[in-house]
Length: 174
Image 1 (cartoon, rainbow, N blue to C red):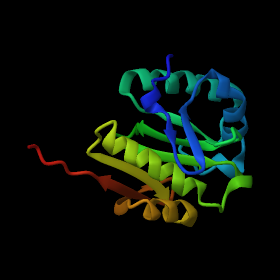
Image 2: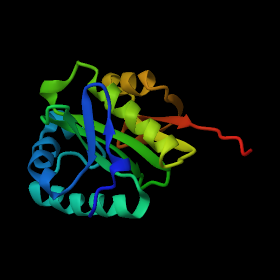
Image 3: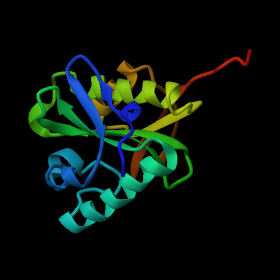
Image 4: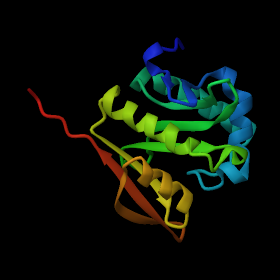
């Protein structure tokens, strides 16, 4: 896959780049860590599962013009991921994020998720972006609120209440 420069996002502290096979080691570390990935849809992944997912994540960039970004500090250290991905349950394109446990608490998830949400509306021209968080996951809910997403519904999954958030961008045709 050729990475289009328009897919790269830079913020004050971060550089978000579409994931590629060069990120496999970091993705295995992130997605295999229960502190980082236990609450994600599908839970903790094995190395073969991560590799299989990565192949699909790379395809998504070519197919949709959005997908999973590796989140790195401006100096290059891998910090986590942020993504815009179609949800398998039909709720729409969802914002997802996961950061390594040792970098939490510094506002990096807010910075990365906010940048991905803006990309979704402005570059990918998505009119609606959703996110799903466990009712008990106050950290994720705080990130979603901080970037301007609002709760719009809920559902039950395996005895847990899941809250649905959304960001809607209305455009007026000239």
